[in-house]
Structure formats: C-alpha cells, structure tokens
Length: 151
Image 1 (tube, rainbow, N blue to C red):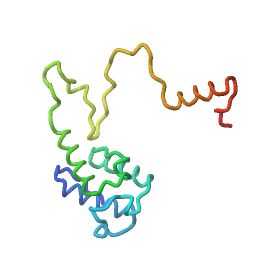
Image 2: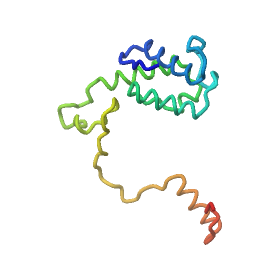
Image 3: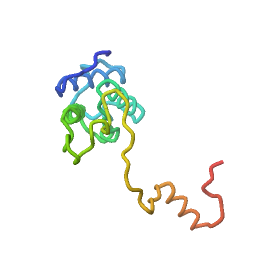
Image 4: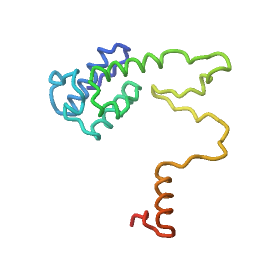
C-alpha cells in the first residue's frame, strides 16, 4: 500500500481508499464494500482520523472526519476527494488581478508549506469560544467559586 494515487480519477481514488480501509480493518480489500459507510464496516473515530491523515499525506486531500463517520459511503468519499483534487488544480478566482489572493498567499495542500494567515481588520469585540461561554455561565451561576477547575 505504498502507491500514491496522482490521478484525478475517482475510481483510482476509490481503489486507494478500499486498500487503505482494508489494511486498517485487517481484511482483504475485496471485502471492503464501497456502497457502505466506514462505520458499518467497523471504523471508529480513531481509525477515521488515521485514515484522514493517511489520505492527506498521500493524496494531499483532507476529507472531513465528520463525513467519514456520518454514514457517507466509501464511493462518495472517493468522489469527494476527486472533486477536491480537481478544485485544487484550477486557478483561483480572480487570479492575476486584485480580486483574489495572490499565488504566494494561497495554501499549498499538496506537500510544501502552508502560507501565513491573511491580514485583516481585527473586530473590536472578539466573540467567546464555546468553552469560554460555558465558564462564564458557571461563574454567573455560582460567582467566585472554582467549580470549573479540574484537579
């Protein structure tokens, strides 16, 4: 399973995913049904993250773990990966003029380093994260206590 698929063909990506899933589940790849979801094949969240990393390093495509665990069939994941790869091959909208990001500002998903974040105006008030909102709620519920501290 060392072959890296460089083609934009969904069938080749599907074959790569079947082999990767078969290897992860320790079953022959011909027993991996592409019309079934990864969860129905026996995948758990750890296996999905491992597969995502493997696909990203081999193909340069980051498939969402949520899609892998949401019941999306393996064939649909392959088509999604092929679509993302095709989108990466297209020039950016407005490339060559000031409408879009310049080539050196776009992230490079196929190996290479990712570019720095774009500069932008900082909002006057930055919204709280969900964890910060929960802590604020606990403090409002019982002021002055340390109920949120985990020892």
